[in-house]
Each structure stands twice: as C-alpha cells, then as structure tokens.
Image (cartoon, rainbow, N blue to C red):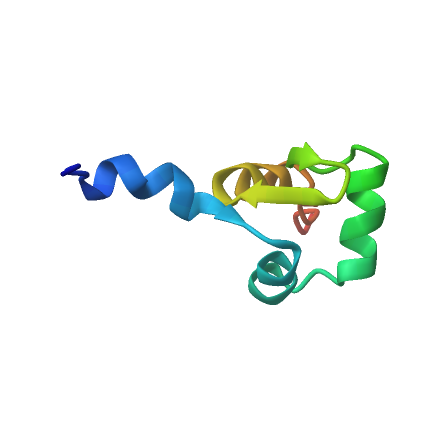
Amino acid sequence: MSTTTDNEDEPRKQLITYAQVETEYELPRRHLYQLVHQERIPCIRFGPRFVRFRRCDLDQWIEKHRVGTRGAK
C-alpha cells in the first residue's frame, strides 16, 4: 500500500491542458498553439501532440510580458 501526501501530488496538480489554460488565463487556444509551436511560451512536451503547462511557469511568463504604465508628469 502506497502512502502519498498532498505535497507529493502537488507537481502533478500543477500540470494543466490547453483547455485549462484557455479557460483560466483567457488565452485563445489557436494563439496558444502558435506560441507553443514558436517556443515562445513555457510548456512541457511529452510528445508531438501531448503538451502540458505548469501554472507557476505561466504566471512568470505573464509577469515577464506585463507592460507597465507611464507615470503622470
């Protein structure tokens, strides 16, 4: 009998699909496909058509692409 804790399962819970990214991050799937193909978004590729994403990577990627506003003078 194997005993696992929530901490051991956490990395698996972080892997999400195209559909989940589309819903949770409001990114169109067609655009996601392009970003993955162009290697412009972090992902985990298990095969040519088997791609998953980690939420922490997506959060960092989004923050990196955030455009700040110019302060009023």
